[in-house]
Length: 550
Image 1 (cartoon, rainbow, N blue to C red):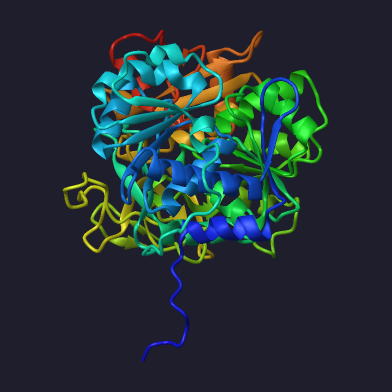
Image 2: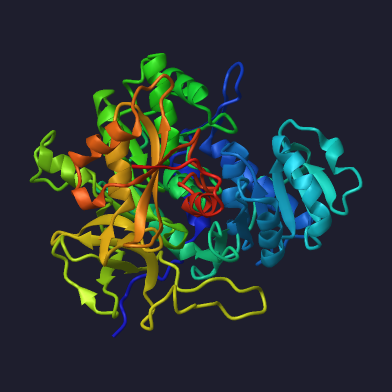
């Protein structure tokens, strides 16, 4: 028996139309670095998205399923592209501007991008790559930048504003199958080539609804969200789409991602919410400590992309900014869990803090399970640790293998029954809260026992003299592997390795204490701001680190 409900496709187009009609007065504010920020209403942005779609179709020959790439900062024009491209039936491909040049070339060619929309400030990045990008027929430039670097390029060069000027302000949007591709994003390729994840209209729509749930970010049109997480990083965690659903005002930092301008944005534009990876917040905390500002209006901070150290969470709590932990990955659209405490946890209590320090609870739509070394399923008892596997309507079921190839489902990434193997190791409590203890590839196997590098890092970063700390496994003749502690100290810090080890001894088991220590000016980061531990392991193996053994 079938239902009697209307079968209306869940598409990005419907999010765009809804935002323009119902929340047309909500604003996208783009920071300019000097003078008044640029402001554009949702209604104005929607009209410009329609004009962009007309220009892409009529002037650049973009058709359904063609890939249109963006190499852009977070700004209003990027938001317009977010909606224009999928709504016309084409596929948005956000390029991670922090990837190495060779990976960008590989990704653009693998996706067969036809058009690249790029911010003028990023032209020096893409110009030398163009001779290696045969599928790119058009470059559309937005904002200030030296266009002369594109002289001689095989691709036709267009100005964004000139391209959309005078174009029709209506578009006969196609009625798309909700399962069609809307956007794609590639993993950062920490091992092997990057892998393409293709999001459907349906997955984006459902994920946007989840972002807006009260047990997720729960934002409304009374809020302004400072969207620091890049739009090339898994669709800015779904915030632009979710904002158009509920009218959340967006404050876009463009290229001004340093701590000082971020602090200025918060003080002057008064956002109520912000989202970014821990490294951004560590820099902002140092800025606010050195130069206090009125940031009292910012009440909710979403931190994801890497584990948030407890010391960082407590420091922002002291500033009146409530940190909400979240977990996800490119393959999960990305939000998979959000750490909103349950109702019975009293605000401000140790129990509530313990919940907030987890990666969060699975929402409706995401199923999780833990598997042991032999593939056996482990109980949700808060103690049994295994690899996390997930499935759901906004979870990837395969990787993009090219336009003429079947999707890839490698056995190390997907189980036989279709669950995504995340590569994360952790536990799940009986009430569905996920606690990750490590990446499977980063856990330290010492004498047959596991040591969590994340636990060691969090403990070290709670020391007042430590800015950053990364712990990696290194070979050991006796134990197989032992932890190497890599530490970034504050300027003028007096702590030495002995005192740091003694500090750790008060927090972790004695057998887990690192014997090997080194100080570095900064911990190497991946393109999405996570600690790049493969670089540290390589530096250690090649003798590039000055290591002290206690």
